Length: 75
Image 1 (tube, helix red, strand yellow):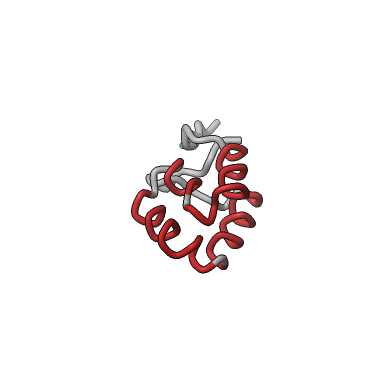
Image 2 (image 1 turned 60 degrees about the horizontal axis):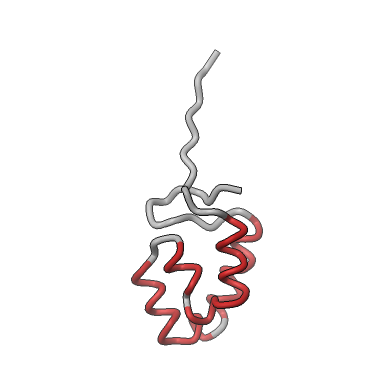
């Protein structure tokens, strides 16, 4: 049998989604997962002119969002 090791983030998907919904235009979800640079971009551009914020909501909800190390968020 093969032994598989999956690496997941220590950050929670539900927390990231809630932060994105309620504070996404300020980049709170990006700061939470360690993406500091893009967090500041979202902070100063109103969530990437709203489009980035909406895309992030869908990406987090579908499980495609990753932390700063490239690991998927845990459920």
